[in-house]
Structures are given as C-alpha cells and as structure tokens.
Amino acid sequence: MISGSSSSNPAELASFGNRVLKTSEKLISTLVKPTDTSNSVSFTLAAVGSRLRVTLDKIPRLDTTNSSVDIDLIGITRNNTERSVAVAFMSYNMMENLLKPDFFNKSNDTIKTMMSTVISATLPKTTNSKLTKPVNFTLKHIREFDPSGSLFCVYWNISEWIVDGCSVLNSNSSHTVCSCEHLSTFALIMQYRTFLSDSLMELLNLVCVIVGLVFFTLALLTFALCRWSPGVNNVARINICISLLLAHLLFLLTQQFLSLIRPLQVLCAVISGLLHFLFLSGFVWMFIEAVLLFICVKSLSQISSKKREVLSSGFLCVFGYVVALFVVCVSVRVVVILS
Image (cartoon, rainbow, N blue to C red; front, side, top):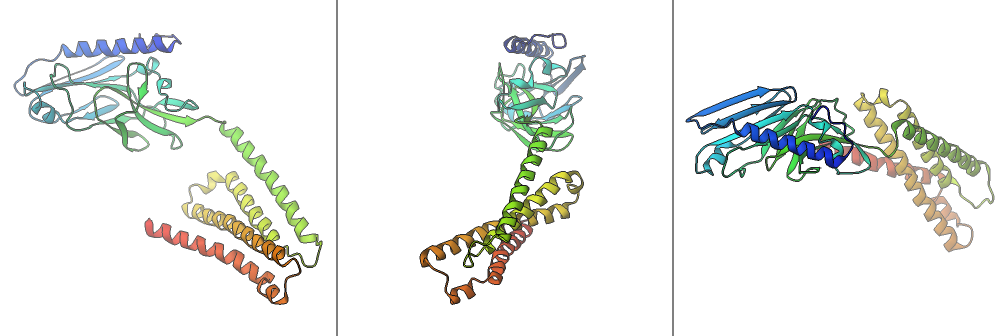
C-alpha cells in the first residue's frame, strides 16, 4: 500500500496512511508482555522498522536506522497503577508516499520537502499515557540540508501535518532534534519560498540595478554640468547621486561575485559596512538638501554671505559623510560588544 499507491486524491492518500498507522499500532501492541524488570523487542521490515520496550525502573533510549527518541518512562510509570509502561517506536521508510509533505499547510506559496523518515511513538496497553516531560526525537536528514529553507517538526493529525506542541530544539547539516509535548506520528518538513525561481530573480535583480545605475549617472551629470542660477547649490544633489550610485554599483558587484565573497567573513563585514555607510550618507544628504530648500524658501532671496560661509561646500561634505561614518562606527562597536 505504501510503495504502490499512485492515487492523486489527497483524501484517499490520507485514508491509506491512517490505516497503515492504525494497523501498525495494533500489531505492535500485541507484542507487549508482562515482565518483572524490562524487555525489548525490535524488528525491521522493508517499509517499517520498530522497537518495543517494556520497562519498570529506567529510562531507555529507543532508536531505529534514521531516528531515536528520549522519553521519561519513569514519570509515566509512576502515574500508572500497574507501575509499568511499554513504549513502541516505529519508523516508516516510505510513508511520505502517502502522508506527503504537501499536507503541511503552513504556507501555500512554498515548496515542501520531507527531510526525515516518518516516525511514530505510542504507549501501548498503558492506562495513563499522559507525558510528564516533553519527548525529544533525533531525526536524521534523508536529503541534503539547505540553510535557506525553514525546518518544522510536525505531527500527523488525521488529515494534515501540523506543528502544535512541537518545536525544533537544535539542528545541523545531518540531524535535527525535535521536542514534542505528546506522542503521535512525527516527521521533519522543510519548506522553501517559490515566488520566483532563483535564475529569474537574479536576472530581474540585475536588470533593475543596471537601470538604476544608468539613471543615477544621468542625474549626476545633469546636476554637475547644468547650472540654471548662480544661487542654486547642487552640492547635496550631486552627493546624493554619488552615494546611491556607488551603493548600487557595490551591491551589483557583490551579487555577481557572491560565491567568492561568501566564504570570506572579513570581506563580507567590510562590504556590509560600506553599504551601510553609502546608503546612510545618501539619507544624510537628503536631509541637507531639505534644509537648503527650507532656507531658500524662507528667505525668498539669495542666502546671505554669513549663511553662505556656514553652508559652504566643504562644510556640507564634511557633515554629510562624517555623520554617516560616525553612525556606522558606533554600529560596528555595538555589534562587536554584543558578539
């Protein structure tokens, strides 16, 4: 049923999956036998690997080929009148053919991939199955880990995968540890954004940045070469264009050589600082331009000689770039202290 089902009907696939889970739990519960100390049974089939443990006095670690579980059986035992408890841990190697990752409705505009085998943990023939502590599952990744995706620990709720009561404790390139407040059927699902393909996004980004560079260059030449009136000060406008032009040019070069830059952490930090400085200086020059326009409108005449000295090109350049540099230096200092 797991390997041969070719149905495309989600309801039918979910029904098949529920029948497999229910049948497996019934079959493994028949293996539970009374014991005075502890007993363990394990078996592996083509599609299912199982581990059954009956214990009274210690906490076992159950594992299969691609997963393991840590559960507080001592606390559960104390809550039962029989003073014993059995735990069954199963791994379904091909269950993703039925309980597909698409049943995870966290976001409809993403691609979802099953990153682990589907596992199931139950307490067969246990009167009070309430957990005293969260259960931790260690799941081995069955596919290559992509840091750009989002990992979710999920459990199966009759017709869909949901995350209620489950969370990711820690993760690396090969394993993820999930913590859940209940027992059920679990899996690890990764989802990726699918608004645009990477190649199309890179092309769109390249075209937009190049168009921006062309218009910044035209604006810079216009403000630098055309003077309509001797009383008009174009220093702020020229520096706005210079700051934004250099920022977009650096951004474009960074995107083109990202594969070479990414491994060099120091170079990445320097480029981030330069981008921060250039964009921030652009905003400072916008503020200076607003002040100059306000003075011109308020005076309704040429700026007096005293004001002209205060608002000279040299002073404006120092103010426009030093303020941005000061803010960037403070930001770097704060990041270094916090790290």
